[in-house]
Length: 477
Picture 1 (cartoon, rainbow, N blue to C red):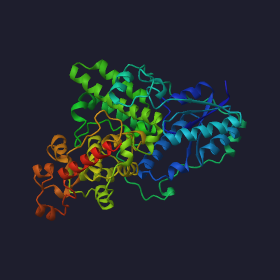
Picture 2: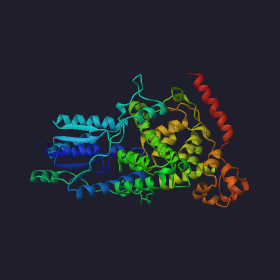
Picture 3: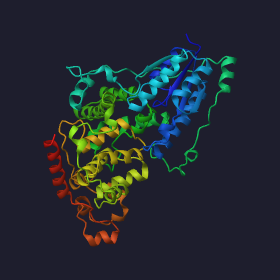
Picture 4: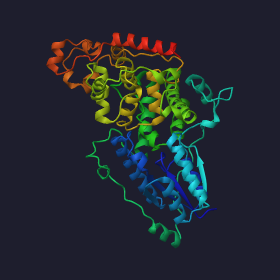
């Protein structure tokens, strides 16, 4: 058994139900945990201050948990392919463990780190922790990766899922030599957003850390899960799990989440209740579908899946894009959703589909503009889920029925029938009649009095225009 193992945290900021960390502890009496601030990620053009704020909160609790369990925890900075091998060498570890990731950059980075470690004679062990079913473990009958959700779900649903694994246990102590080696390392204190040039952070909508994530899962399982199917599309109520940020950064383990659904099914007393739980399981499967897809088709990170969309004639009007970003399109449900995003760093999933459809089908703006804007603001911004959702909405992705166009008025009428959500985020329209808020047919004089803009486009005209362009690019293939 190795004397000391280094565990590299990335998207698994917890000491509970962490598959790689559990393996690392099985290999040694004491584990050294570390997190490396990668400049290519920190200074990328898709960084959201809210997500960094949430990350720092998770790291603070992770550091405290390591200290409580008497294991060292190191905050490092620099290029991981240089930092991780050098730290492992200086500590004298014989093995470095981490959990795998699906993103193209992450895979490239991990290959480079692996090469650097093996050059120094240090063993590497990697496992899948953020997925219930590994991407290599599920294929179509012809042996290819799935590109359509429904058959993926049917196969994925029947795959064996691991139970939660053993939490990190108290450490066995370090030798004097190991303590001296740790003291010589260049580690950093936990930084703040100000250290990275960001202003004073606002209050987080979602409390960071694994303790808060576990409490949120418990609340959702106790109060909302059995009503999930009826409530999940109503943005004015708390009908979703609010666990997306925790799953993005691994503040909670997906096995524990899945176990909650299994326990809920076992306790359910009606077919309706079981259907609600099944619907949430299907949403968890959507998360895995998009991660599997990105793993097998890394080119999706840079462009559309459907060939004809590589040459789609987008308008890409910068003034209209800015109005969309600021929630000033003149369409109440769209503007309410964008203001929720800009204020809180989060947006209800139904509203994500509405605003994505509006940007691509009404404004005829490249979905990648919206994809980047979301990543720059979302507390739960995840490349696989965000890319998959945007390509689905734009009709450029993996969808059995690709041409979908959401009508903002009908979406508002169906999912915000009393205009509660619209009024919450557009307080200047509080006194406007509900039917006008839902249809968007607010009289010009009322708009002027409320200082609310006229619609920047006509939905019906833009819908016809998009369909015509869509037909033309398909015919020109």
